[in-house]
Every structure is written in structure tokens, then in C-alpha cells.
Amino acid sequence: MEQVERIGVSVDKNLLGAFDELITKQGYQNRSEAIRDLIRKQLSEQCLGNLKAKAVAAVHLVYDHHSTKLMEKLTALQHSHLLRTICTMHIHLDAHDCLEIIVLKGTVGEINKMAEKMLSQKGVKLGNVNFVCAPGP
Amino acid sequence: MEQVERIGVSVDKNLLGAFDELITKQGYQNRSEAIRDLIRKQLSEQCLGNLKAKAVAAVHLVYDHHSTKLMEKLTALQHSHLLRTICTMHIHLDAHDCLEIIVLKGTVGEINKMAEKMLSQKGVKLGNVNFVCAPGP
Amino acid sequence: MEQVERIGVSVDKNLLGAFDELITKQGYQNRSEAIRDLIRKQLSEQCLGNLKAKAVAAVHLVYDHHSTKLMEKLTALQHSHLLRTICTMHIHLDAHDCLEIIVLKGTVGEINKMAEKMLSQKGVKLGNVNFVCAPGP
Amino acid sequence: MEQVERIGVSVDKNLLGAFDELITKQGYQNRSEAIRDLIRKQLSEQCLGNLKAKAVAAVHLVYDHHSTKLMEKLTALQHSHLLRTICTMHIHLDAHDCLEIIVLKGTVGEINKMAEKMLSQKGVKLGNVNFVCAPGP
Image 1 (spheres, chains in turn orange, green, blue, yellow):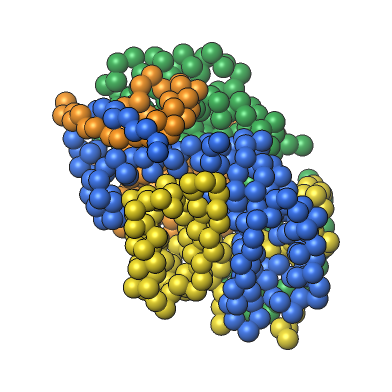
Image 2 (cartoon, rainbow over the protein chains, first blue to last red):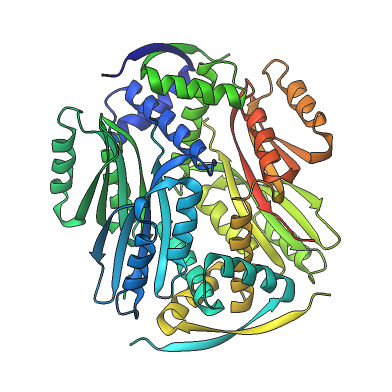
């Protein structure tokens, strides 16, 4: 069970009004929750600037499953870095195209390099990497 | 089988040199492949500015699975928009935290609204939406 | 003189520790200041999703000043939208290239359209738009 | 005068159609121009991942000019890094707020650090950094 601290924050009335309006619209039930989320987002963004920081990331690839040997190559790439691939999810978009989401664990730098290799494969049409978190110990 | 056209492009020698160096490092085997990927990325980015464009997106949520009733609430949210949730993937990050990736189909505007509701739930620590494609015939 | 309110926020001890470390490194002198900045950033990002929101933006263009008639065209574009161009700044990058920063006022949608026209001019090598704020009344 | 090369690129007919439609809307007069811009954008984005790469950047700050001594502090910060500040532009947004754009030259890492110091000053309400280019020799 984590310990919780209560801190005081001074905010201009106008700014607070605009913030309350936004978070109500977004569905937050109280300000603390919304402010904690802002803090976590900020820490997460900062972490991504550090190539050595530990992170979990999802690589998203759109590809035509008719591409010769692409699936074998992607699988081989993942196995060549066995420790870092956690799992994958495969979605059929239409008769040709698939979306594959591959969750990797490693440093920001390693993940970027691996993602680059996947995205540059012939047959991969579109893709990107989404670093969601760099959780602490 | 898609038809392929061959177009000519004029590029300054210096710029071409820098581009060739980059794409070799990234692992591309030829320029056409790399340029097609740039074109797709550009089309995809443009599409996201249009709230009515059709898209597929992955919502990434990090949450503590001890949070009371969070998992039920997230599942309920997905079922309340049944047509748009394609599938989900759940990853155990550590003793407390999970990463859940939820793939949604719909318009950019609808997906944004749904994602906002999920991200603002109590217990969701971090999250974002990753629009990967807006393919269409 | 703006009125200031004091609100209480509950934050897990670990999260608070990581946040304090970050903001000290960034140079903040107290948490309130840092949290207010996070709130403003969030409001500003939200506003940019709304094409009708009022905003101020800086368009950044890199171009070769030898490009025939480019400067005339860019100036003409600005005058054709007279009310929205506030001012411009011109920086010599090297013997060929200039950086021009053009500050526009208008709705997010209008600014995007204007920026697109500028960026697509022949001779403009690189560019983007930076929405900095959508200040209230 | 730069040398220009003519390269051939194979593109699926559907993809080419969508691209042509987009660039016509954006105002491009030919495909070569649009593709060159994509290449430059890609090179520029890549460069920003390298903290040692040389870059030019514009820091955007929104602040209340009534903030005690803020303007002196910002000026002092710029002079303490004399070589890297190229010029600044100051815009009056309303009775209270100013937008200041400060153009800096240096490595990506140096610029980030300097920008962080500016953004964390008391009185600076909103801000960000916009790296526009990392032009070659």
C-alpha cells in the first residue's frame, strides 16, 4: 500500500475554473486524480528523452499479409531479441491489411532501434512506436 | 493486385545523400520503399486532423489492477460502445501495474471521446491514444 | 490583480518524490509553479483540437532567399490575410537559407490553412506551426 | 548552385492518387516539391533525437510582463549564453500577457537545457521549443 501525501497548490482563480471545466468534460471525478495524471504524463515524457531509461513500448505496424515472407521476418526479428518482446496482437483490418501491435520491454534506445528495423521492412506500410510508461522500481 | 506507377522526382544531390544515409541506417533496402512510407505517414497524420475520418486506434492504459472496480468499469465502457472495440491485450508490468491496449475502430472524434473517458477513470495512471491508420478503399 | 485559490492535492509519496526531483532539475522554485504550468499546458493542448478556438501561432519557415519571388509571394499571402499577421522575424542561417517566423492570430482552423499555403510554396524547404497559446478573454 | 538528381519512385496507384489529392489541397504545384519537403521533414525529425546535433530553435514563452524581474532574468539568461541567442521578438497579447520568441543556435541538448531554465522561471505561464532545422554545411 502506497503512502499518500497531501500538498497545497496555489492556482489563479480563472485558471482553476478553466481546468475544472476541462476535467469535468473529460470525466474526472476530482482534481487530485487529474493533477496526478498530469504529473505522471510529464514524468513519462521526460523519461523518453533519456535513451538509457527503462521503458515499455508498443510498436504498431500496418502491413499487407500477402507480402512475401514479411511475417517470418518480423517474427525472426522478435526472436533475435527474445528477452524484450512481451507479446503481440494481430488485427485484421480488411482483406489485405493487418495491424500488428508488438509490446517490447527494454531501454528507450534499444526499443527505438528495434522499431526502426521493423518499420523499414518491405511490406510494412505504416507504423510507429508508442512509449506508454517507464515505471519505477 | 494493386497497380504500380513509376514517377520521377527531382532532388538536390546533398539532400538525396543525407536521405540515403538515413534510410540505410534504418534498414530500408531501396528508396521507393522509404518514400512510400513517408507518403503514407503524411496521409495518416493529415487524416487525424479530421474528426470525421475513419480510423483504427490503440488506447494504451497503465493501471493498478487493485483499483476497486476499475476493470469492470473499463469493460463496461467498451461494451457500451460494442461496435467499436475490436480487441484488447493485457500485459502484467509488475506486481501492481498492468498495461492494457484496447483497439478501437470508429471516427477520429468518437475514438478521442472514448479514450478520454477511459483515461479519466480513477486508477488509470497513464495513458494515450495511438492512431495508426485510416485505411480505406 | 488575479485572485488566487489554494487547493489540496493528494499524491502518492513515490510519485511526489520523482516529480520534485524533476522540477528541481528543471529549475522550478516551488511545486505550485510547476503544477500551474502543467495545467496551462494541458489546457493549451486541448484547445488545439478545436478548430474554432482562438489562438496565436508562430509559423516557422526555412527557405532559400534566392528562390525567385518567394519573398514576394509570402508577403502577399500575409497581406491577403491582413488582420491575422501580427509580425515577422527573419534570421539568416547561412549564405543561402533563412528562417522566417511569422506570428498569426486567428482561429486554429484559419491558422492551419494559412500555414499550409505557406509551407507548400516552392522554395520553402522546411517548416511547421507552433501554437503557443489560446489565452482567454 | 546545387546539383539536382532525378530519381524514379514506384508508388501504388491508389496511394499516389490520395497523395496527389492532398498536396493539391495544400497548394503544392508538383510532386517533386512535396516529396522533397517530406524528406527534409524526416531528416529534421531524426536529427532532434541526437542531443549533439547542431540545430536552430525558437523558444516560445507566454508571460505576464508585470511579473517582478522576470524580463531581467530572461535577458540575463540569454546573455549568460551569449553565443547561442540569435535574436528575440516580443508580441503584446493583451493588457497582461506577452509572447516572446527567442531564437537560439547550438546543439539539441544545449538548447533543451536552456529552454528548460526559461520555462521554469516564475511568471512564465506557457511555453515550448520548436526545433525547425538542423541544416547541413
